[in-house]
Image (cartoon, rainbow, N blue to C red; front, side, top):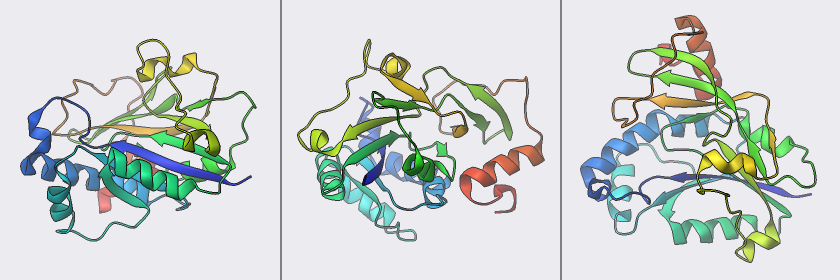
Length: 235
């Protein structure tokens, strides 16, 4: 069976905040993406995947100009509108049998073995979604980290037959359609700590790292080395 892996990232294609179309906002968020999520993608032990970073219409020129100020990003990580992203996915999966679409926010991390895990995964026939319930919460400002559990977090994967996807079939999340309802689909849980949810200076989130089970600095750096491909304390 020929399986393809896509990692989907919504950059600024959702939301009503008009600032998300400005150069200042885009530049700041691209710096955050480079600091966190991009490093996670670049550290993957298996680079046989496509990542589409979805943009709102009307800002592609700004994004391209801002990206050009830094080292080039590999071709398997592509920025584009939702329509452009759909076309890229279609071209990428043509001729394959199965498609797995993982999602992540543009400031979070997946374990460096995550893509390899998806290539190797053996599904039950009825499974529609894979859920990563275990991960870490990292406050990159305060330098704090703790393991966390979420029954149905935003770190999930949808499974498609390529023919169905090319014919515009999409998995519909039940209930309110948000990630908290993904576990109402036929699903399996990956029993590994596969994600890091990042708190940084530009977060609007009020999340706090739990006081219980906080990692030491050495433990935290060891975890980050598995997600970023290097010990960030020395980078």
